Amino acid sequence: MSRAKRRTSRRRFLEKGAAAAAGAAILAGAPRVVTASRTSDEVIVGQGDYRYRIEHGWSRLPDRYTWQTTHGVAVDKSGHLYVIHKGDDNRTDHPSIFVFDSEGKFIRAFGSQFQGGGHGLEVRQEGSEEFLYVAAYQQIKTIVKLTLTGEIVWERHAPMESGVYREGEDSDRTKARARDRFAPTNFAFADDGGFWLADGYGSFRIHRYDTDGVWVSCFGGPGTGEGTFQLPHGLWLDKRKGREPELVVTDRVHGTLQTFTPDGQYRQTVKGFGLPANIDVWENLMLVTELQARVSLLNEKNEVVARLGSGQERLEQIQDLRDQPGAWKDGQFIHPHDACFTSAGDIVVAEWVGTGRLSKLTRI
Image 1: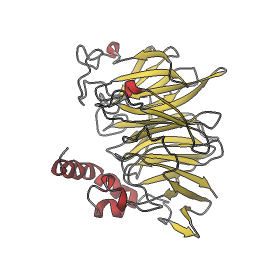
Image 2: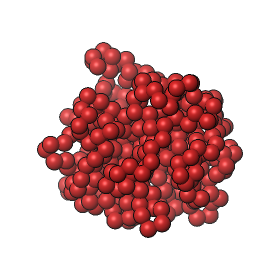
Image 3: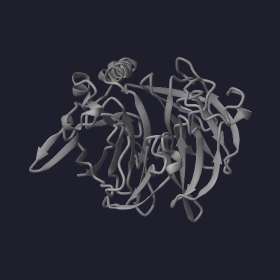
Image 4: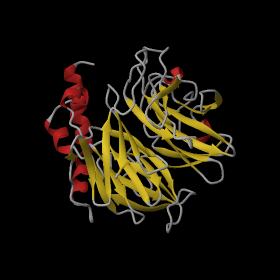
């Protein structure tokens, strides 16, 4: 892509998020933002009881592999971290999923079939086993259930029985984004063994599947909010103590979270985010990654208690910052795309940058 085209793309990206950024500035109860502080050689982000020691570039790849735009992260019960990058579609022999131990040491790689379309992934415990769920978009257009070492359990394409896709979409691999196309982004898991899937770059719908990956129903679609979306990118089943279980969906272009009953009935909208991308939960905290350069933490009342790594000002000042690693600052994010909590409440953040960027945030 030419530099002129990248600049045009960048301007459009920021224009889409302008309304969300404005809302974030007036969010009721939002804390004073402290970008980062330094103690000796450590960089600290966060505020009050929510402070973290941040280490960028936490995991290292063997020389034979390279990062190609990090997208999704998830942790299994042993503490192993799974990372998926979008991958360059002209490098079909290169894996798109990397696995690291709890210290950031490389373990294995697989998933070359997702090159050019790797996006979301989650780890799920099912009985005595754990499985990896992968959502791949663009010309891949599939969802896959894998073992933790990469063997395929099942694979699904566009759910034609939903009635929302053009004829042949389940077999067409043309790279396209439209409301009658299938371009899935992320998963959330239901208590009955089934799951929800966000078709974030396609139909703007949330699909419900049973435990065998069979389509059941859907809700949403394009619209102005309160049950409809402008890019429903990430989702999570929120079961924090003191709350009724509800499905939370990041409505990215609107800069909001929308919540639903497990059967898809709209409940409420939480405003004030800069292009929210995905969600994770640990104890009473819910994290929201925001492509506009920060990660937000919400308590069980969905009140913002901390903003981590805020770097929106430099994102506006420096054109194409995502392509300039030399201009990145310790303690500031560029485009957080996904993040996950570890069992200890630490956080790993993956950013939407071409060179790949993983950051480990250790609780203080």
